[in-house]
Image (cartoon, rainbow, N blue to C red; front, side, top):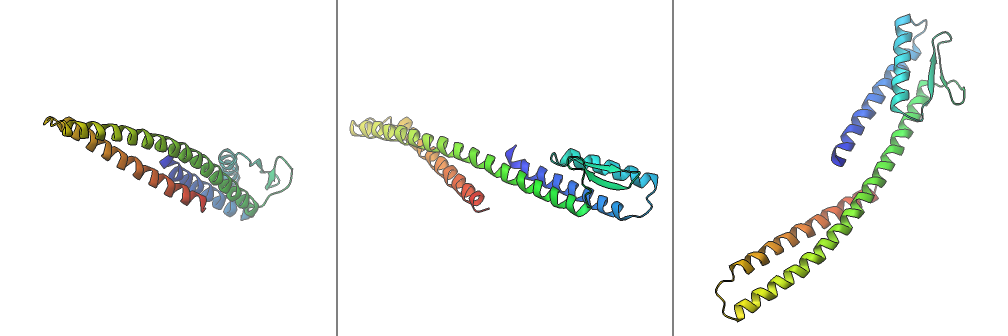
Length: 172
């Protein structure tokens, strides 16, 4: 789910950008038709829905875009700036959330590595004692040691990947 979040956000940003571009084009039209005003109203509603901090309204009578919170008239350019600022805020929020997930994963991986190393040491000791005792039936111990070595390798690779992703997030 986390992996798909950036893709969904890019689509949302593209949708906003297209809506803002359409709004800019329509806002520039002089003497708008009723249909153009209706489209402009729809674009304003879509933008308000996709950008929670935006409280934009369109007055078809005066053909003006206003911020409902302040009552100030807004240009399409200021709406674009606000949308970009909101997108960047969401990006930062998502990065913090992802970093929290990565830190949680790092802790879990580190704990699993310690546990696996303990189990591997115990299995290796058991294998060694069976070999010293001359027991020819050591396949199960050899298999256990091999499986734990593979698991340890996977966990360490996961920890390395996790650290690399954390580093990439930190450098943004």
